[in-house]
Image 1 (tube, rainbow, N blue to C red):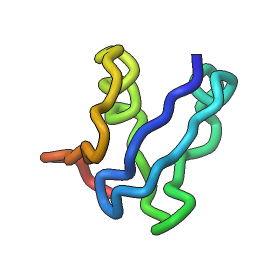
Image 2 (cartoon, helix red, strand yellow; image 1 turned 60 degrees about the vertical axis):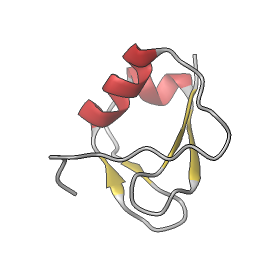
Image 3 (tube, rainbow, N blue to C red; image 1 turned 90 degrees about the vertical axis):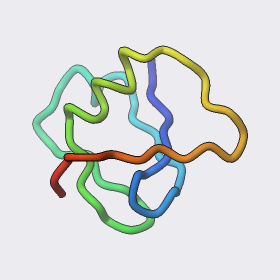
Length: 65
């Protein structure tokens, strides 16, 4: 299953294909602001399994760039 999320830095919508979630040789980078997104952040989103509400932005506390 693909993962769609909002960048915690700029709020831009990003897409991670299923094959990228299974093979982590490259980092995931926001296509708008070029912030590197941590795999632990993406895993926590994938485990959440809920739909985002309209206009909702994700914030990450304690995550390093």
